[in-house]
Length: 239
Image (tube, rainbow, N blue to C red; front, side, top):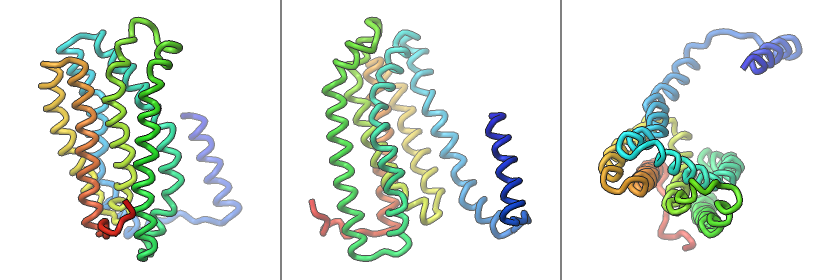
């Protein structure tokens, strides 16, 4: 943190010295920032709470050992993020360029990219599921081998999250960030209820199912909002 602060100070110094940048308060910019950022506060809080709620509920209902097993399963399933997050960052400029200047050709590229993206992520998700036993046999201790049974369910959730990241771009571009918070609060609330009841009856399996359902609901809600903001002729999509 100290290194980052020092780097920030040095950067500001050279911006002022070399480029002659002058800092001044712009009320219109501040209003725009607040209008964009404030609605995301419920989203940020909800994401943080959901990251811990499953483990807290599982700990209270099943015990710390099950929390450890679930955490290992989540860690392995999250390896899929190594693939889709760089791809997601790579396509960002092209997607936002399309939103800025939409064309029929751009619509076809956007829809085709969605389908290809889904196929690629699903394929590698399935591949990760197939190699899960190998990963556990080489890198995971014997006390956590049970976690392999839940990786498949959690991979479904990671695929849903990857598609969520693709569709949410339209909402961020339109600056209607309150819709992101709505999807997070709704899917998170449903997820919390599911976590409590499913964990009560099914333990770790219930937790994994609840997590994946929450991601899926969030993706479907964001897709609905995105299609309302930027209607696409999905019937013409090259399925």
